Image 1 (cartoon, rainbow, N blue to C red):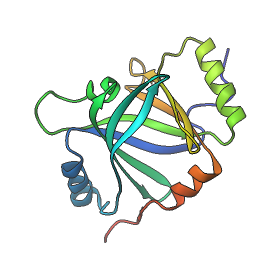
Image 2: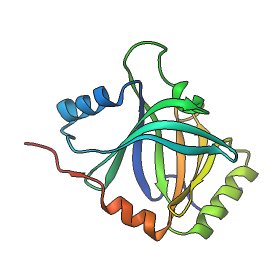
Image 3: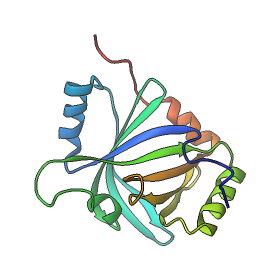
Image 4: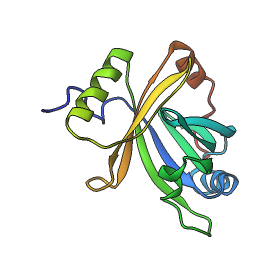
Length: 168
């Protein structure tokens, strides 16, 4: 069965995990001209129903693409922590995220991917803001996909994120 919604449709975000969010932000400023970030320090997210993890997150837009930096801090954060070396500073590509337009499309895609046996490795929601799940495509593509649907309030929040045009 072929999914009715490709995970590449509605590409919103490129996400990286890091062992130090401050160093990662400085790197993206210095090397990629992305100086402006919204920081979400020590945010707790649902990793699976009934389980949470705490992360430092930074978000920024460059054009229409959102960048996300994630520093795992505690809890059920192995999906992020496992991509990093144990002791030195690192930034590693982690996932790309697909923005799904409606909650019905989100539910349909989740059901289709689960029926196909796609490993769903993270599954949660930010009440009143978003629902999300990750599928694991590391064996074939080298990364995860995040599938995310935002409520109208969540979409309004995206509009508040810093926009970087890059320095000349």
